[in-house]
Length: 528
Image 1 (cartoon, rainbow, N blue to C red):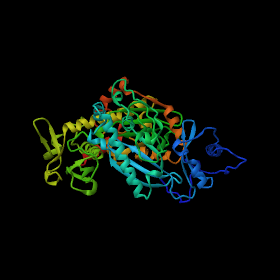
Image 2 (tube, one colour):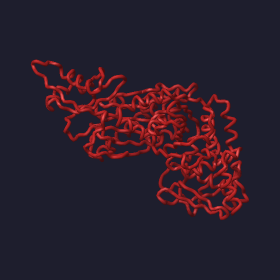
Image 3 (cartoon, helix red, strand yellow):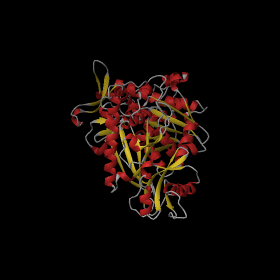
């Protein structure tokens, strides 16, 4: 986000200045009515209320400041509510916090509500990982005695600690935070709110709520200004959450004339296709494998984790890059996709995804169960043991990549398109930030488009959540986005399994869908 000059004030933002006529014997209007009438003119509305906690301090503050004040006014439903009041010249700037509430990682951003300036950002592991690494494990734990309370306490406590830490590092006080914008998947927002998520994972997969809206922060235990509010981005059912709603807002695809697609891969692969006139969305289980969760050496990104792989054809030598250039100890999702792509392009994997012993050479080992390929010999790894990928690992990855491509193929087919027809392909999250499109195309996970078509959004969930802090109109825009989305249920789609079977080859049973891959592989195999 581009920083604004220090004296810049967002027009039509959440903070407004009021200069009121002080009361007199000839004007006995109450303090509350005086402020409300001033703000009604400002917002051109007849619905303005004042938070009760603020109302108790209102007469003292207005008199102290000579009836000149800055107001933090939040839109709640059809009306506006005053939640903050400060002297206009006071350096205690009103603040907002954007939160990307991820299953594995949480990111928070502190924003100046007056100017929109980003003051700081901080990330930390989701503490619920101690209960279970995935959503399913956490939902089952929530059904145990006090389980839901424990999951809720973990995330609330860590959020409070990190919000305070970030605020202090920026020379600010959490007391001055009036608005929190939170985006997360449906289950994560339920656990954050202390809502029972058990029906999310059971047919017919119904959440407690789809539109949490604007809630009082103190009711949820979040330690910001006592009158502060939290806006929780809405979800569409159980598997398309507020993080994607925020991502759509950030991408701007809902305002584009041409049709674009947005893909965010985390716990699930969540996809939305559309333009300014319509949006279609779906979600499917393609995430864990693409996060590096299918192989024994798979792990989340961190120092010593392999994130890039290249194989020199003919020589069979592996060129590995690790995060922080540390000694390799595992591999993350982008590294695993790179590895599979180069194994295929070099001929070490055939079109069925099976190891070719003639090409793999001495790297290929055999146990009683199955073959496995040594990627990093024990003497070169941080663990002192071979880092390897087994045939079962490759098979799991192929199922996940097939699911990913089939989701894309199915959602485009639902509107009479092919994946190859797309001119803009937004990729979001960690998946989008680190994946090499060429590798993803090579294994048939993404369509064979020009690389220019792929637009990396980074953490679109956080960015979309942060946009809400600078423009109240985004509240209505988010509602419009949600109301325009048609959700495609893949579980009952008859064509999905047929397409899925065809996609379980490298790159696909129909090589004409991936012409660039055929050229690259043929060149490698003919010029060892």
